[in-house]
Image (tube, one colour):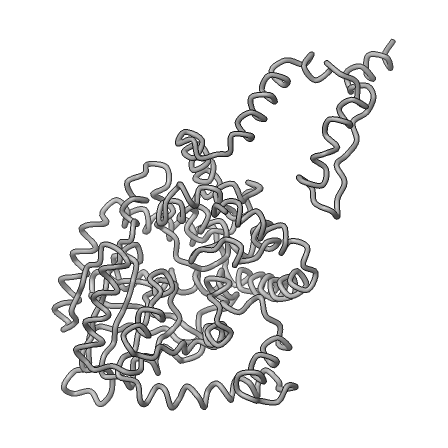
Length: 457
């Protein structure tokens, strides 16, 4: 079964899962309420978005310059910068670092880039336990799952689901409250922090002028991940660069407001190297792995390159009616929702993932909420055109579109047969196209133009 067929099958199944839709509706409703309050704090949010978009477009216009500036300053701070062309190179670097430091335990702050290269699997393949320290990530790791959402990894689970999971895995009370479960995880993780040899983070922003790495989080787990282990590994996509440190004053509130509805995220840390001689804690070594993994392929496309401006706030996922219907796992890729549908065909190949660019109603809500003004619907359309040009669409679709073109090219084509004939012809598609819970509208016996002509006589 092809990835497109798997996507279609999974979509049909999850779309009518009442419990799933109830959980997602509840969780996104809370997000929507928080974001409404977050946006209300802005005097002119549109101006802030325009400024952020301008900075990110400047980055794309001078990408090589800012990346080299970052490398120079980061190296001067005492960190080692490693350039990884793809996941294989990145994981080779990580295996070498783990081996050099005899690592048996690794603690990891939330990072979608590490999900992209499957760091947990890589670490465990060389005998090093990898533990997620973000609460949502910890939950899905315990469940043997991947993140459901790029900001809220366990969005698909209710508190009852999590209580049941913890009861099965840790023998905690089945009626545990969220506070009790959080406290249990806190106690587990504190032991991991203090015994781990390696701590891993991603990067929300790479700051060129100071060679710094900015990590933003709400639980303090990122700070703990880097405070105790002797080695800090940063794994960041090369698109995360911004030119100046002072620009964080613009990006921090935008990311927080669009991501969680906060005025600013609780913990915002800038790492500028390993522990200095006059410091009492922090890592002894720091490595920064800059990951391409086909990002330069996106950059080379004149229509899709602006998608690299994304700051991973997750707003487009929460706004998307398709994502809210079929959920995060149906996409079967690291990045889901509109931004994932745009990027994944480039990151993992049009042959297997071009179908994601068709998983959109093109309603434009994702464009409306994007804090850096990425023209997502335009890129989705250009991706669709590329898929057609590469003959990646089903033959039946091509035949159907040619037939529709023949019928719709002239008004008379719609009136070739009576309405009851149209209903007979289209009836087999009712269940296939609309699903079991909806009915296709019936065609009238006479077309609108015929009814209008009869009325005015």
